[in-house]
Length: 269
Image 1 (cartoon, rainbow, N blue to C red):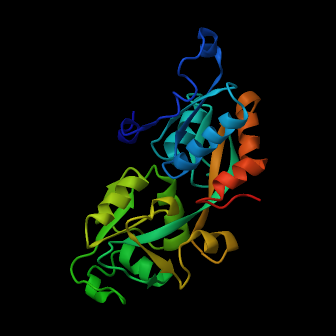
Image 2: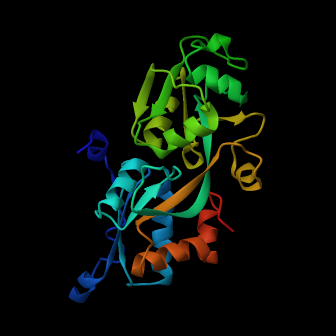
């Protein structure tokens, strides 16, 4: 079992609708989800929204751990849905990727170092290790060694960041790896020399720099102007069936789900 698996954090969905129910309620089917810490907040809200419209139909249990963990879990039949914030890979066998939304990745710095904008060339130089001191970064208000805060290899956000922002640039080996968006957010918030990247839903309390002159915000993500947008997926073992299919189709097609998604993410429609 990987060290990432040990860091999984349960989300309090298992108890939804479970208080003071008759004994027969224990027979309700359970939809289990694991994986991306970026997708988890949206999946949690969608599950709650689904239960409002389909009371006592199912129960949900949700855990995190990273996109690769979710894909591996669903491929092995350990969960109903693997949450992924990375696109499918050729190595993903026997699984089906169901797109549910889009999300923006924000490059974040400490509030005491509120860099207004970073170009792709600057991001590549910083995260590639070519530029190592803030005095060499245009717009920086501080000096000192740059502390790179990144995600672990199992992260879909890490995979998307590398593909969208770094391209062919290799990530520097001098990094501090974190297992979740929240841990990156807290590390950057508490360290004036830090820089990292998170799902836009985790950009509160830190400075989110514009990317190539376009702000990392919901309006720009929805319009397509912001270049740091990636897909959110619910992955199933083969094509979804039964209650899992009903939930995913609701998440993709219903106006109620689109309203939930549109609060912090980009709906499909």
